[in-house]
Image (tube, rainbow, N blue to C red):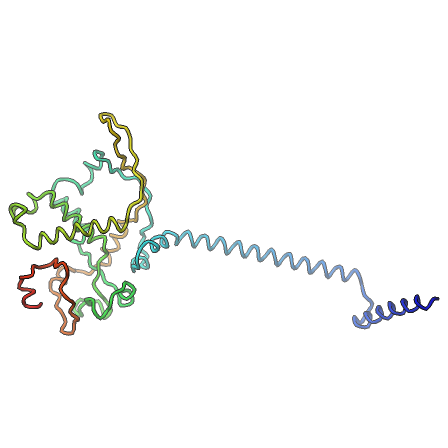
Length: 304
């Protein structure tokens, strides 16, 4: 045997013997293949489980997003409000309202009918004239950008604890202002018995009216409605007529109203009329413009 062949054979023999010694027994190729198959099967099962787990998480996340999508949308276009965290069902209601100039809404909506006790009651029910006051706590007040040391705190005799601050949901004040402007349309019914002609109205009435006009305008501009109004050809008109029956997505006002009434301070108007300023209250400058009283009123002269 040639020297090179013997050297090669000796090398291979030593290598095989070394493997045998390390394994403790002769190498079984079938066993190696079986182990590889088992590893591949285990890897496939692991990948499959991970895929199922990932799919389950995705479905769960999608479900969660669908449930909170509307709430997140509200928060995205609003400043902080504790209402969003109270579970109030104000999900968007998609519907088409009848807002034509002469449609059924003109005769069936109580809010635009001639003055009557029923009309006034309907407006008062949705406006700040009907138990609108709720309370927020200190943490909520801070998130609202208010200083709990400065804002009015509910007195002890209200029985609401040491962490309650009177507040209002703004929409009810805005509707109150719209109602105020509605009454101006019916001056003879609401104000002539007190003032006579409009030019005889006192300072407070004029300031209140201007304040409400500003509030309604501010609200409309702040929540700029981008719904689109199209036009139709109508019999009897040679010009296009606006169609205000466009589909809308609206917050569930009825649910918000129900929640507000359920959580309103009991006998709030009586409590509000009798509330007294604490001796340690922080006094801010007079409001500008001065909405509540005239500059020569006894209240301001006495520094109340």
